[in-house]
Image (cartoon, rainbow, N blue to C red; front, side, top):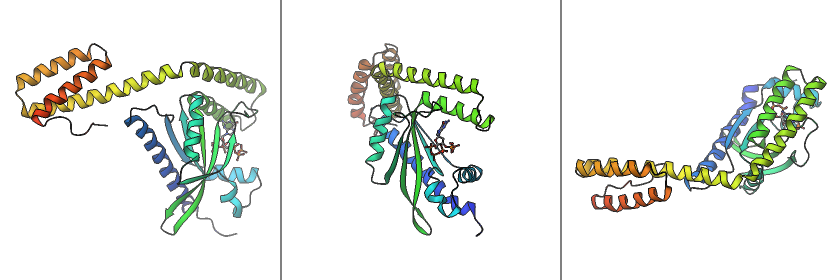
Length: 270
Ligand code: 0O2
């Protein structure tokens, strides 16, 4: 048997995970910068440990030559969403991308696993550019809600603790917890639009305040300090009203005033 240089074998997978995590994080930021709700809440990634790869190969009787085709989750990325509805949105987003091809979809939402596990898994083919040229890598993207993630993480730790042989009372308890998670996700969906509106308003307010303060800072360099102090006091007064529309109006007026001094914030801060 040839000697396996694991560091070399796993390097393209590390590249794939790093790139995918960064791309999905950028997507989330793009939504937020445009004042939109992002169906992606959080992204994490990992390369499977050699011990876990070997364990899976033994369990599934996979010969080393078939490892890269058959162990589909050496590169693993997890996308956490706030609401069940977001999972489908992320699925659609990923399915239309030019830089990856979904080759398999495992829908553990429609077909919950016996353990109670729920998630949508996409197996994608993704090309990384290495010093030896382009390499197609398989990666598993798990898409799930925060509540599903809480359940899966806890269950995974218990599986590890009991070496995959959960005592019946623990399995029953986990099944009950999975049922509760299902109900919780549905309950949260009922108030989805209200939560989204509140989150978007909060993002807009954060951006407005940053822009306003930057403009005031710029004005401080060019306008009289008495005038700038008055503007600042007015800003604090309006901020205290907790009225987003008032804050937007104030920013517009401030921009007109600052234009005279060419002191408005040139580009909105992220
Ligand atoms: P890790 O530590 O996450 O890398 P399988 O036979 O289930 O091992 P298969 O058929 O190749 O694997 O793929 P499947 O079923 O889609 O599962 C792959 C991954 O999904 C698992 O990776 C888990 O991360 C997750 N998963 C699947 N089923 C369950 C479950 O019942 N509970 C939890 N908590 N997670 C699950 P690994 O290899 O287990 O490990």
